[in-house]
Every structure is written in structure tokens, then in C-alpha cells.
Length: 333
Image (tube, rainbow, N blue to C red; front, side, top):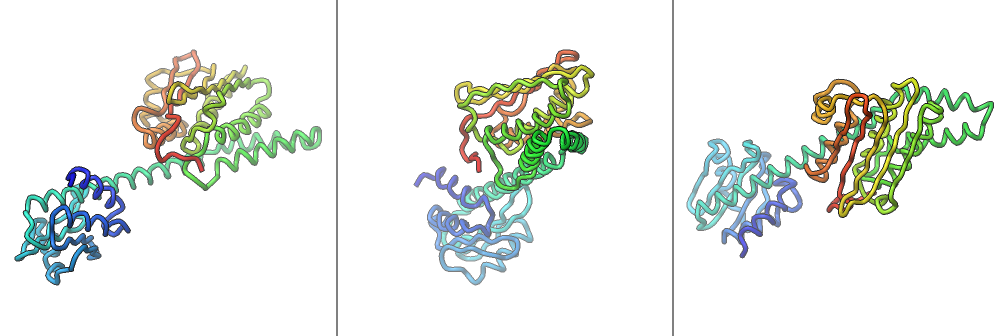
């Protein structure tokens, strides 16, 4: 038997915890690996999963192992504490003539699997919290100006008022949608088009927009609200702060196995050190959207992806988002 492959399989089966539906399969694999008469996996609540006949002495032995944080033995029975993130997580019980060193290695595998599972759960919780923060970041100022603008067209141009109201509904629907963790770039761009239509209605000729997206990147799956905050940031910080307005350019293209999206404005720009502080989460002010997008991209795709800010004072700002065109487990709903 390939011991390394067995260890990896056990780790995968136990990522959801000792009480997961796959814990029984892990216990069976451990039993075969150690050539034991029986294997028990016991969590801190006393819930046990067994492969083989349960030994009546096991509960007392588990209490002893957990209480003293060391192995506990009886003739033909061994209990070892399981640790995840240096915290007690349960116990491994081994029945039969098993070597202590082999049992310790098995306990280490189980502990590492539990720790990995906790880290993945924490990352998922953080990602959902950041997404909720983005949804809550809809600007009241933008909403008020948009509705005021729509109201101004009700009497003079009711058809335009109707169209803008539909765009507003699409924008709100996309921001508040509850289903799925991922969407396509096509879905993001539909919401962006609605936002830019509303922004042009509010800002008039002060806002100039150019969007160029290669069709082959539209099906690419990305985390929900990965692109829209970049466009909103360009309008709010690159155009609205200038009396004469400005332009926003959005482009997207495939570069080999990757997709590169850039959002550029010709606004006031910023000190590059401040841009680095923004992505590091160390800048005060309304930079929450960029920070959240960057962190979620890196969590999903890895440290080699995320956002890059190219800027200088008086030279505008360009935010580049790089993601893989295909990534295991990332599928738009």
C-alpha cells in the first residue's frame, strides 16, 4: 500500500471533522494501514466512529489521554490525543498489537487533516464576510442622485426614465443577489453596463466611457462582485472629483491561460505608496472594495493572482485584475 497516498486520502476524508459522513471511511483506511483490530475516532463531545469492534475500555482510556495530553495504554488498546492548531480536537483509539510510532504518525495525519479543514472553513467564512461588506457598500449618495435623475425625466422623457429605472433594478439585483459564490465576467459586465448607464445619466458629459472586452473571456468564472467595485472606484475617485470630469476605460483580453481585465481612469491618481497601502489593508478611507476584491481573488485562485494598482500623482489610476481562465472548483452558478 502507498503510505503517502493513504495519508492524503485520510486527510481528505477528515477535512470536515471527526463527525463528518466520511469519518467512517477514514477509520476503515486507518485500520487497514495500521493492521489494527479496530480503530476509533472520538471527538471532544464523546461522539465516536469505529471500524471494527468497539472496546468497552475505550471511553475511560480516551478521558485519560485527553486529560493528560499523552498516550494512554491498556493491554491491546492505545489512545492518542489529536491536535489541530495546537488545540485538542479528540482522540485516536487503536486496538490490537500496533506499534506506538505508527499510531503516532496516524494521529499526526488526522490532526493535520482537522487543522486544514479548520483553515479552509475560516477562509470561507472570511470570504463570505467580505462579500457581505461589498454588498453593504452601495453608496447612498449614488442611489440618491440616481433616483433624483430618474425622477427628473418622468415628465419630460418618460421612456428614458423607464429605461433608467430598469438599469437601476438590474444594478440593485446584482449587488443583492444571494445565490452562488461565482458568476461569469458576462454577468459582471451586465451589472457594470447598468451602473455606467446610471452614472452617465447623473454626470452627463463629465463622464466618458470606453469598454472593450474580448468575447472569449466572457464565460470566465470569477468571484461574485469581483469587477464592479473596480469600475465604481474609477468613477467615484477618478471622475467625480474632477470638475471637468474624465474618462473610464475598461478592457479585457485572454493572455494564454489567463484573463486580464484593466480598469483605467484619467483622474488625479495617487502616490504609489498609498496604492500599496490600500491593497495591504492599511489605508484609511473608502478603499474597502479594492481590498476585498484582491483578498477574495487570492483566496480563490492563489497568491499569484489578484489586483495590481498602477498609478502616480496627476497621472490617473489603472487597476489590473488577473485571473485564470479555468480553475478547479470555480464554476459560475
